Image 1 (cartoon, chains in turn orange, brown):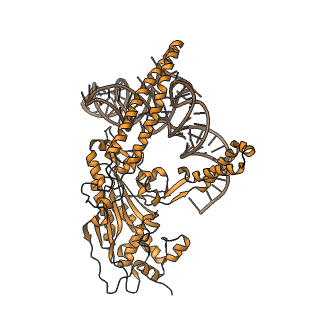
Image 2 (tube, helix red, strand yellow):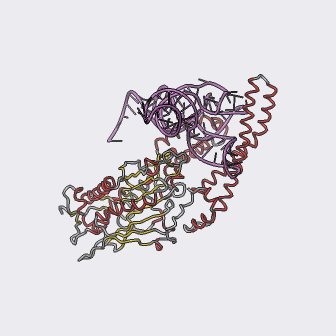
Image 3 (cartoon, chains in turn red, yellow):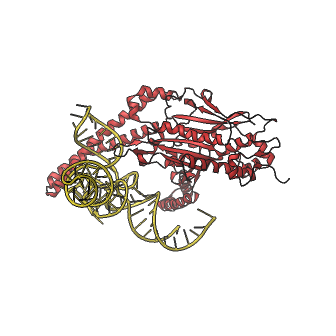
Length: 478
RNA sequence: GGACAGGUGGCCGAGUGGUUUAAGGCAGCGGUCUUGAAAACCGCCGUACCUUUACGGGUACCGUGAGUUCGAAUCUCACCCUGUCCGCCA
């Protein structure tokens, strides 16, 4: 969400910045909406003030038993009423239109973010660790997984559908070890507090981080069917009662009643009260912990980490990465979230990226750090670093982490503020999030980088404390 | 799922149609007194928006939304949430 005051003050700069994200100039439209909104509000406030003053006089007149004066004043107020009603509706309409327009715009890129509209313009900042050389041709993770019998794609399809996988046995253990290792690293060495947040969230939470209103189609949603049934039953009973006339007069009374109840049923299934979104990342619940708060700046930074399942519809990715478990509807991820005062987010962004990089360094996986260009960032971000891990089976670097500084863009949506000790003025916090890391992809990276010629996978040293003696993932039995 | 109670500023808490401009207290901040501290006393102490060069002025907000009224924290309706007890449950 953007600050309309800032747009008002520097419209050209705003248009130039959103142009870098491929959005057409909008400041003129927004400013005009804002002008109408303020005009309505100013007049409304004035009339309301007049009404309040007159009402008070009525009270005084009545206390003095001066009914004639009271009646006179009441007539005066009545004259204001119509205009007041119109202005209220106008003000609300302009305000909603403005908020809606503002909440659909992506964040402005930071000054040091390169221009460009897609990943071709991303800038490689550094490479860490050199890809190993293999005396054999490295396999891709799905061949390794199926060869071991520990990655069952057919079972995933049977149980759920495409883009679901069942990971088994020693590989499942290895994935769990990866998650534990990451959480331990972030909590003990980087000061993050481990959390277990809800994986289903409401509309307000999904709006706060920017999934709604624009990107609802990328999410899975659930409905509380029992609650819907209950509401529908209550509706049906009163609906039939209220439409008894239909039963005797209409040509097709039953049809009319069925139509009414069907319409209500359809409405209830989309009622936000009964709908929960499956989180696409733990960023969503963790960041929203700050929603509607005024946090004392002495408490900041807040640093949270969580290992959760993440759910994504991958609607825009048809045909991409269909083999294997690179791109799944459900995957595990350790997420990092920081809530900081506005003057600290730049340094926190570097720190968070370092935490994510440390995971790959300790696992001794080669990777490169990318600075995303303006057009390739997510809507909430003002600046993003991607970590791309080397996959010898695929012979390329693949994204495994994305660390973003969102500035105050999410904070404005969430109304998340902070206040310096002794200060009166509140400021919007800055929010940051990063994967530390995507656990499913880390499993793939370990498999491909630590594979042996016989198809077994050596366990990285740093994971050995977590695997209960297992040092090599290999096929057991026949 | 059943029964009851409740939702007021950072916290506690009064307030059932008009001097409420939300009492009072706690916490916090400033001051007087004191060598210093405590106590006592005095003062300040919610958020957002509109307006003004500024000083200032105004409006909204008492869980949310609608309604009644000249006027709503207060009355009406719906919804949300919380607590307690009972039932069921991983």
